[in-house]
Length: 335
Image (cartoon, rainbow, N blue to C red; front, side):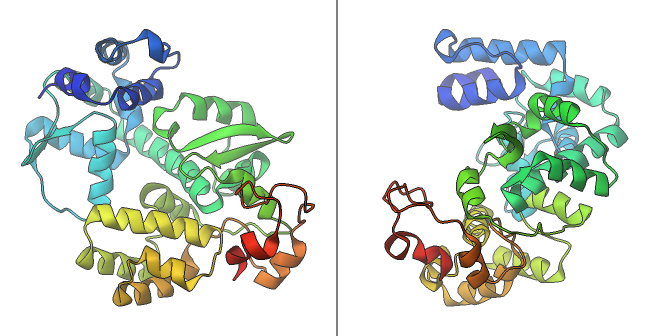
C-alpha cells in the first residue's frame, strides 16, 4: 500500500497531528482534506528530506537503511525494538502488512535522499540531546528552565534559553513529548505525555532534585527505563518472558504515573499488575528505582508537613474538582 492510500483511509485527526509535527506553519484543520495533508507532507519532504532524519533516532535510521534493501519480517522482537518500529509507524515512515514492515513506495525516494544527507556523527549527537530532553521530562514531569540549563551544562551541553526554546519548537521528534511553557511567571520544561505538571508543582515543596547521569537520562528518554541498572535489565527480561511488547509498554506507563506521584497503594499496584502474583512481586522490587516527580529525599511525613494545603473552599489539589477535603479525596496519594 502507498502512503497516499494509507493516509486517505487513516483517521484525519491522526494524520493532521503528524502534519503539525513536521510543518512549522500548518494550515488549519478545517481548511485541509487528508489528500491536501498528504500532498503537503510530500512537498515538505521534497524541499527538505532531512526532516525524515530529524524525526528519527539513530537506531530508527538504521532500520530505515535496512528497509531500503529489503522488507523486515514481522515478529515479536522485544520491547526495545517494538518502540523503534512503533515510532517509525507513528511517523508514517513505514507501513506493515500481516507479514512484513516496509517503506511505502511513494516515500522510498525521499528516504533515499535523506540517507544520502545523513552524517551519522552529527545525528548521533542530536539524538543524544533529544533523548536527554525527553528523559528529563519523564523523570521530573516539570522542571524550571534554569534547572534544565544547569543539568545540561553539568553534562557538557551548553544552550542559552533562546536557542533551547527555538530548538524545541522546531525539532519534530520532540513535539509530542515536551514543551517549554510560561506558568505563573516562570518558564518550565513539561512533559506532553503526562500533563500533570500543575498537580506536580502544587505537591512539590522543599524538594531536592534527583540526580541522574547522562546515560540514565538518555535511557529514560529512549526506553522509559534506566537500562544502566542490572536490576532494571533483569526486570525487563522478566517482562519480555511473560508479556508482549504492547502490554509491557502499558505496564511501564502505569508505573511511571504510580511512582511519579509516590502513591504507595497496594491495591492500585495489584491492578496495574492484573492481579498476577508473580508480576506483582517483581514490580514491588523495581518500584523504588522509578522516578518520583513530587519530591526526592524526604519522608512521606515530611512531604505532608511541607505541602501548603489550599483553603477548604478551594478546589482540591488532586484535580478532582471537589472542594478540598484531604481525608476523603487525596489521602490515597500519601498512604
